[in-house]
Amino acid sequence: MLRIRVLHGPNLNLLGSREQSIYGMLSLEAVDSAITKLAEELAAQVDLSQSNSEGELVTWIQEARAEYDGIIINPAAYTHTSVAIRDAIAAVGLPTIEVHLSNIYQREEFRHRSYISGVAIGQISGLGPTGYLLALRGLHDYLTTSKRRKPTSAQATSRGAAKGTR
Ligand code: DQA
Image (cartoon, rainbow, N blue to C red; front, side):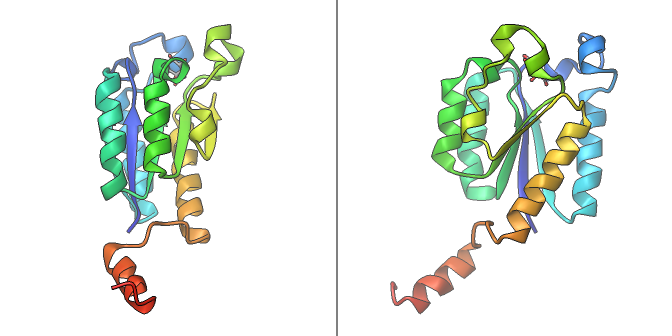
C-alpha cells in the first residue's frame, strides 16, 4: 500500500473562516476528509498534519523518508520564504507535489515566487480543495505506473542478496 504524507502549512488551520473569498468555505477538517476518502478509493494510506511552525514541517518532511513513499504539501506562506523546507524536500528525495488553494500567480507579486517548486515533481495552484485530490491522484499515478516507488525493506534486501552485496 502506498503511504503518502500530506502537510498543511501555517494558517491553514483557519480554513473556512479565513479570507473566504480567497480560500473558500470548507474547513481543514472537511478538506482532510475528502483527501482521506479518495485515499481509501485508491487503496493508499494518507497521514495528514498541519503546523504553523516551519521547524515542525521540516522535521515531518525529514521523518517521511523512512515511512512514506511521497509527500503532498501546501507550505502556505512558507512557500515564498522557506529555504529550509525546500532543502528538507531535496534532502529526503521523496516525490513531492506542491498544492495551493488559490492561484498564487494571480495574487501579489511576492506570492509569485515559490522556493518549493524547484524540488517538487509538480505544482497545483488555484483549484481550491480539488487541488489536493488531483495531487493525490497524480502522486499515486507517479508512484504506481512507473515503479518509482521505494522498494520495501524486504525487496531491498532480496535485491542486495541477488547482487551478492550481502
Ligand atoms: C496558499 C497561498 C499562499 O500564498 C498563502 O500564504 C497561504 C495559502 C494557498 O493555498 O493558496 O497561506 O498556499
